[in-house]
Length: 355
Image (cartoon, rainbow, N blue to C red):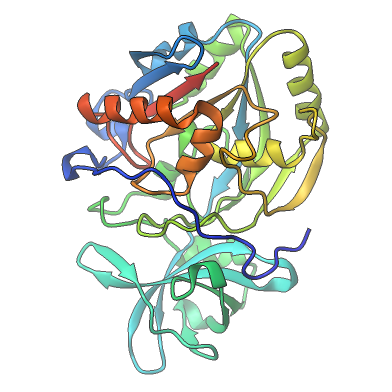
């Protein structure tokens, strides 16, 4: 499946105010005892109940026979320093590798410890990158015009090797200091390709996964290479590359037939599974580029529950959450999170939406 330029469309979502003090600014292991030391809200749609836990309690919350589907994509050090011909210094984020060797990229201008979208790029601009590499702007990405661009990039080396030498993790203004790439990778990561961490899986540790499996909760992977998701932008997600292995498709079907809950760990997993689910909800193996945008109008067919972080006001991911939980109950969950001081962003707390 080839992602056409301009395939995503702008969406409207629920808005709310996010206080600065609820932005997680450092990894959980810096604030507490370990990655698992975050809070977990559990919302059950059937009774519209909301409960509060520590994340390690997920072992008791999930039932034997349930299945966690995780994203095995690893995070790339996808942020580079760039310079225009006029001397303007920029931050250059590789978002998604497109067919034919082009890249979807984001340009940002430094703003203190953070950055802002750079809206003055032009088609034909040549950007100097570290180590003698360069990028040429080919065209604007229509749904995110002036924020995302299609570019050709001449690395002079395999992209992964180049980025390992010259790149750093993508970081926005709420994170005040750099952290190593290891802080942006989950225990499930086996295949590099995401511009930003599939952060819903970050709180899992090897010990916690072992405890879940010992309880009878299954864990199986998909791969979806996530692109950038800047907090200012509310357009629907661009196409992303995914793979659902045959073994995962079979396990999802067996879980549903056995009465267990299929719980996606992150919105990226929902997108992957729903892409290969037919009209009856049967999940098939598959891989390629997904352009699917999951929202309340379409609903979900393959997923019963979702483990997710807390998304920014008006983020398009909120529409996917509405498809899982319904807008009124999702509104209650977000109000509860705000009232109880849950932390947002990739280093923040989590929400488990269950049937």
